[in-house]
Length: 259
Image (spheres, rainbow, N blue to C red):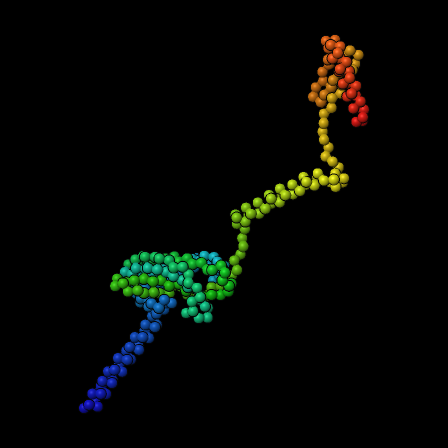
């Protein structure tokens, strides 16, 4: 009798251990997010990359991931948070970099679908090669139980960023050209004053206006670059007339020397 009781107790304990092991297997299968939370069976997700073509993205550039969150149950869920991770392409559970998370706080009623946007940006200093990108969504039910589902898990090819010409570069180049032009003009002005420049190219010509004074009998004819006028010497005093004649002779002698 005692032996049968012991065997019955052992069988019950074995069943409990077996059920517990099966429950652990179910939890491990449902824990499909990197955060360790399980995914609700009433939730379906899908994703779309509108800004990424051929699974290629430039290092340091932002990328958008659209998520469709479908509530297939009869109770609402509150979507709390979205967060992404950069993982090893060989081991997706090995997190290399945590992207900035995005608070959502959107309630999805029963049998409804919500479309959510998550934007992530890689470190500009990271290597250009293939990495895995995983994005999880965190949500609560009415009992405040936390769930998490991975809605994006893909290997992307990260390439070197291409350097395009933007407005800032254009302004920098324009400023550089202006400075070079001013420096070149200043150097030319300085060089034109040196003896070497005058020797090979000649000194700059100075334009001057001359006035010729000629005495004709009782009149003096004075000509200039803009006008000419005739002066009647009958109205000029004799002393002043002699002074004019001296000045005329001096001007004539200077003109002869210049010629």
